Length: 61
Image 1 (cartoon, rainbow, N blue to C red):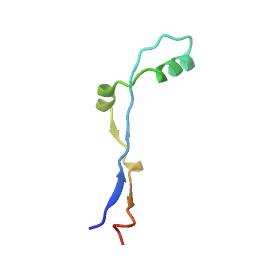
Image 2: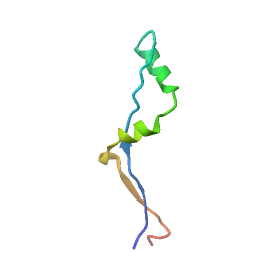
Image 3: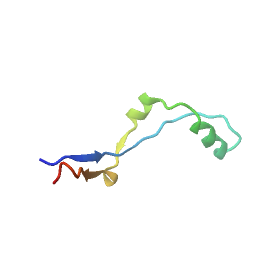
Image 4: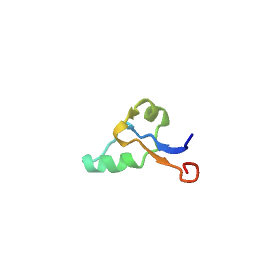
């Protein structure tokens, strides 16, 4: 049996309420906040189009 390194991708987001002068500043400030791991995990969606697998050469010969 062959071995593969597989990357499974998911999209996700964290929602924050930010006080700012405009949308650009709000995004910049939100990027600096710590990630809420509980919220991120509950918002994950499968992104099958980006999943990929790579054969591991030594084991696949």
